[in-house]
Length: 324
Image 1 (cartoon, rainbow, N blue to C red):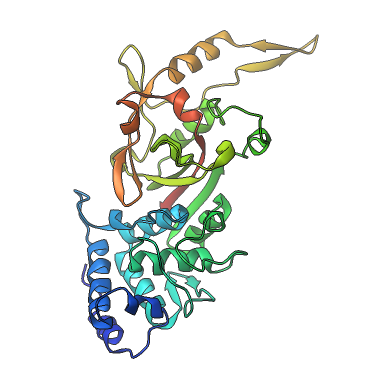
Image 2 (cartoon, rainbow, N blue to C red):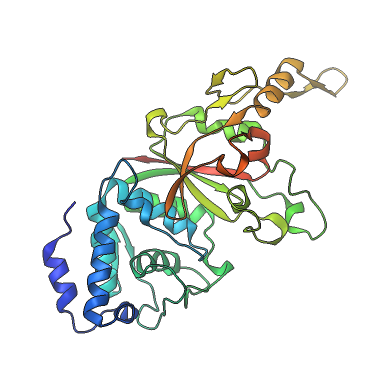
């Protein structure tokens, strides 16, 4: 996709950008602006091989995986909206994606720092900082940059270009209490994962612990800390499970495993459902996700054998996204 040349010319000619930090990211301001436009153009390319294109959007060491996941979906579906948003922010400190308008309060004073690309800093820090309590004063900002499911869902819906639903699970209280809870116990049930298969989705943003990809990257106490985007559009982003017998399934949520029995008011376990749950939890997963500026296999850090039960220890639900 070609970016609006009129906007590019305005960007080059503007004496002072709203994001003044952009001009500091090259040997000269002109060099910095040329690099900015080249990076923006690369992110707007529709590339099915994922060599370039939206997958280049990368929050690197910042806690902006939520904005990155959102922007990845926008750039894939509406590259013209994405490019217009980024350039408007860079020049004027205000940009729009569909009906969503973003105007970060401290664009003029913010410093990039770190190793995040200026084009990503402008796009991601702006939407994260638009109406939040803590400010992204630099790329070194830590937990203040985290994105909760509600705001991520709202960003999609407020554009008027997507319909998103929040299907994340509350974080177990024990995980916030020092010395209690196990980081290897399931945080959600199998059915919470299988809800993904209830209906098709153009995009599924998963809330996980980052340790599922890289050891020792998650925060203390095992809180959810990372958003990724499923990229298997051929299956409408449904979860496929390969059982130990080699059968590949795309199951929907199972029935109620534990039921109250009357008279007597005692609990009864449905053995058929229990056995099916255990069979599926022992199965393996492999699907591709967008994360950290790349498209990777979810099981890459697990020797190609990521079991469902292992994923559930780091999984907290999802946001389902469809184009309108």
